[in-house]
Length: 374
Image (cartoon, rainbow, N blue to C red; front, side, top):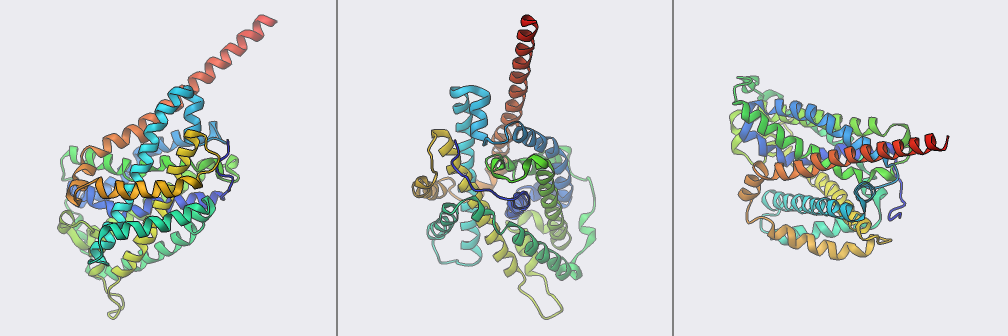
């Protein structure tokens, strides 16, 4: 059953992955306090760890080119087993939407609209995201290429603007943290945000020309985003040094110190605007995949009637999910990566293995019938 007939180009798909990961600039604080000046190494380790994970995603998309993740679950595990597995993914998609909306509201409330209640900010943004989602996947992903170009240009400008205050001794000593810190940090970045790319298995069936090379676009988007995040971490470490572990918004604080050509300052405004655009993009993707997943789960012909009730649910969920930022950070550093790893890594791997086994059994049974007939 086709709920969404819109198609996007493979290039849109790739750059949507770039912006999706790049929007997690707020989350660098989750591992800065753990790995400190070695946080840039965590990006490299996380990238290597996630290469096999992306292979699992691509393999599933290739085996079932016209099916979303929810439909793949039904195909692999059967009607009842597939529904049970799909419940985990639907909860995950809605929770990610909620968490990112809460992050966006918190950032705007703290840095721009200090006197505006967080609930008002969250409600305004979910309305904008709902409007985007209503017009479909092509509208949601339309400006991914433009956002990538603009964000890369701003990143280069920010590096030039902060170069004069960088202290490269801030990277020393290297490999000075306990081994557990590197494992912990790698686990966090592998699940938040790299492993969140599992949501793109909901979008993969709508990519044009995917038969010719979905893998290169999946990997291409991932590696471009990982490189850009690495540059951000390197910049922030060189500028802020030991202050990193005490800041909730390292990139924002680093750009506050920047001056371009001795006359242009307050470059952090560009970061604020860009981050809002990024999070709007990511929330729209997550919102779209959430209600699309529900539509496939219940076999509803159109996802649009679900937009308003889902918007209300997400706003309430975002208000009640955490009491404060400290609780959010604590859970994101502690228990959340383990729940995320189960959904992002273990479930897709089990799905792929079961799929391979079922196809092997079916092939063997077919060969036996042919042999008997002969």
